[in-house]
Length: 467
Image 1: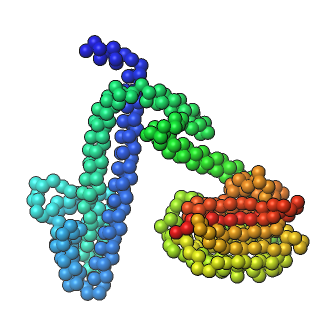
Image 2: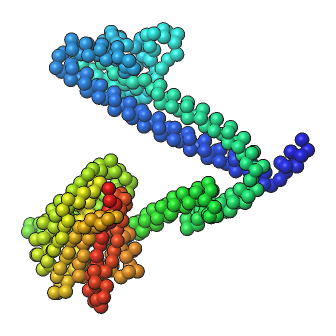
Image 3: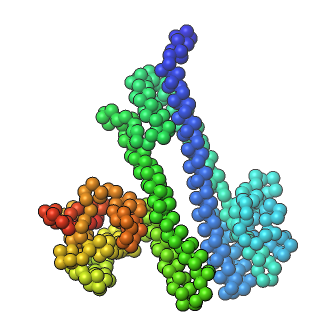
C-alpha cells in the first residue's frame, strides 16, 4: 500500500491519470455526438422508407379505392418486419391495422408527426413496454385517417450498443493504461508532454504548429502524421476563409456601391430611354455579382464533396472535343486561333459537368489573358494518355504567370491584374483546383515557352489518375 502511495505521488503517474481522464471525456463526448448523428441518419432513412410506403398506398387508393387500399395494407401489415399500419375513423378510433393503440393526439394531425410517439403492439397486451415510432398520417376524402409509420427500435438499439461499447472500451483502456505505464509509460509520457505542448500552442491559435514525429513509425507517429495533415487542412481552410472574407469585402464593395449609385440615379431620371440604359447597367452589375456568388457556391460544393456520388465513367475525349468546338468561334472573334490535339477514347471516372466547367474556365482564361499580337495568337488544347496518368493541357502565348505567383492565383479572388480592368472574379482557377482534388488528380501550372524573354505563356495541365 505504501509503495502504491509513493507511486501515486509521482508527477508522471498523475499526468498519466489526467491524460486518461481527458481522453475518456473527449472519447465519450465524441461517441455521444457520433451516436446522435448516426441516430439522426437512421431516422432520416426511416422517414424516406415510410414516405415510399405512403406513396405506394396512396397509388393503391387512387387506382382501386378502399378495397384495394385495405388489401394492400393488410398484405403489408402481415409481412415480417412490417411497418405500422392503422386505419382510423374521423374521430381517431382505430378501425384496422397491426397496432393496438397509439399515444393520444397522434391521429389528430395530418402529415408527419412532429415528435416520436408511443404505441402498443397487439402481441404484448396493455401491460407491455410501449415502443416509439414516427409516422405519416393521411386523411382520405371520406374522412378516414391512414397512419403509416416505422418503429424507432433500431436507432435506440444502435445508441445502446454504442454506449455499451464505450463503457467496455473505457474499462479496457483503463486496464491497458496501467499495463502500458509499467511497460513503456515513461517514454510515452515524455512524447505526450511534447505533443501536449504543441497542442496548447495550436489551441492558443497558432495553427502553424505541428505535433512532433519521432520517426519510429509507431502509433504516436501515425497519429501525429494524421493530425498534422488535419491541422494543415484546417489551417488552409482558415486561411482561405480569411482571404475570402477580405477579398469579398474588397471585390464586392465597389460593385455594390456602384449598383446602389446607379439605382439612386435611375430614380431621378425622367427620360425613359436614359432610365432604361441605367437599368440595363444595373442588371449587368447584378449578373456579375450573381456569377461571383455562384462560383463561390460551386467551389464550396465541390470542396465539400457533395457531388462525389455523381461520379460515373465519362468520355474525356468527347468533353474536350465539345469544349474546343464551343470555344473555337469565341477565340476566332478575339483574334486567336484555337488548335487542339485530342487522343480518342480516353475515359475517366468523374463528373461530366464539373470537368466541362473546369475546361471552360481554362479556355476562357486563355482567351482573356492571351492579349493581342502575332506571338499571342494561338491557344492549344491537348489530351494525351500517359502510362501513369491522363494529361489535359490548355496552353496560351500570353504574358503567363511568374513562378512565385502560381500558388497565389489558385486562391479565391486573387487576380494578378491589380487594376481589375479585365473581366472576371478571380475564382476560375480555384474552382479548377477544387474539381481536380475531387477527382483525385492535380493541377499543374508552367510556362508554355520557358526560353522566351517575353510572352512565355501559361500552360495549365489537368492530371487525372489512370483507372
